[in-house]
Length: 247
Figure 1: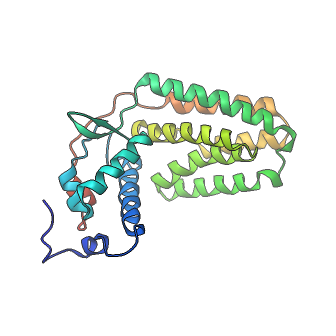
Figure 2: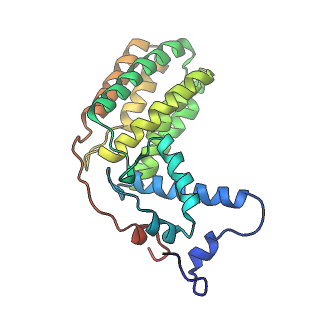
């Protein structure tokens, strides 16, 4: 049910489309997409949660057409799944999907470290070091969603040092998927992507010990996969309360 036009909330008024360029609608799509992803990363939307259109449209102040475009985008990113009978639900990666994704990452990221080789000296890795500091700070402040994102960004930043756009795109897809898996299935109180381990890999690279760096990366990803909880709890979520203006 849409809100009455005579008594819109401030949040709804801010999100209502206005006459003008298509960028207004694109901004609304991005706003809705980001809010849903943020809720997934922060464990407010557990795996298997049904994303019912009516309360979401009311909460965000958007129409069904726009929301469905967001759903398609999120499905392409594998954040949600679209089913003929159930509609949109938060993704539930299987154990085999997780195994394959982490296996692919171990193969690719080991090769990345081998390719970096002698180039991986202090100044070359400075931007990656700064990112690890940001990751540590987000963890210390309890900003879980930012910490999760920065943990994934670390791996992409290392690969970007090679300047291979095809490789960047390939790993970005895998990191996006495994970051989602981490957000969905990470057991409470466990760190599945430690900034200490990230620094240890950089230390090995700077010391010229590529073999050790590769071993540390493999162990790091193995540990991340092993600590994921395989049977998440499925709960009903009040979507209007979660995303509405009064939250």
